[in-house]
Amino acid sequence: MRVFHGSYTAIDKINLSKCQPKRDFGQGFYVTKIRSQAEYWAKRKDRKTKGVVTEFDFHEYAYRYEKLKLLRFDGYSEEWLDFIMLNRANEQKEQAHDYDIVEGPVADDAVTRRIFEYLREDLTKRQFLEELKFKKPTHQICFCTVQALLMLTFINDGVDGEIIYTDDDVVETLMEEFGWTEEQATDKYYLSETHAKFVDESTGLYQKPWREIYELFLQELNLIK
Image 1: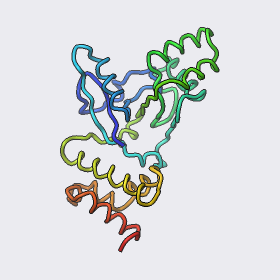
Image 2 (image 1 turned 30 degrees about the vertical axis):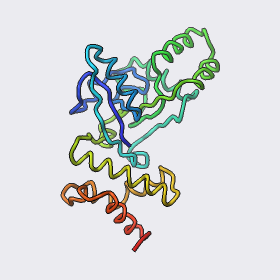
Image 3 (image 1 turned 120 degrees about the horizontal axis):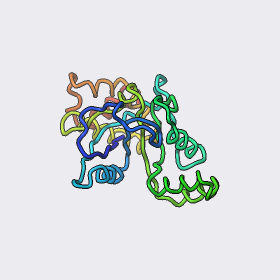
Image 4 (image 1 turned 90 degrees about the vertical axis):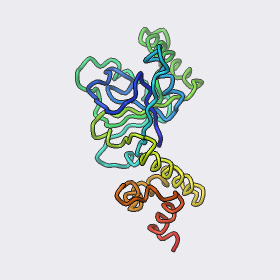
């Protein structure tokens, strides 16, 4: 999955200790799959310029990697709100949770104002959550640990870019031709021997057309001869 980080400057190295605490999902490095949202973040952080959007590849096999602890919110919910409150109210130096990666909606400015009203008991939790049903979808992923950051790869105009484009094409074609869900296609492909060879620059496979990589993967699964 291609994801984006909006900031006043390009990111060439991630230092978790410099990330702001008391954010929605705690202290960590935040990205989104919605580019326009990252562009908005970039402009907010430096109103004098357009800011910079840095692109990454998020290796989604992280969701099935047993050494990482993950939490995902599919949408606004009571559990999401409680987790937001836990992190924003945290006054300790340590993280308020032990997850490596957290994914879910954003508590933007408008939502934050309503959170304060909720805390003042000007509206109930039920009223608050009812309002969120009509809110425009947002998205963020927080990488909270060094181990989690290993699931991110910087994208540039060279090898990384070629790998990302091919990965997207292969996964989409698997979904179309075999009727697999995105999760099934991603799981099978990213955990395959073919993909391991493909991302190894020494093999030179990243220079091959994506269709050749696709056919190698099908041969590995004995789907074609």
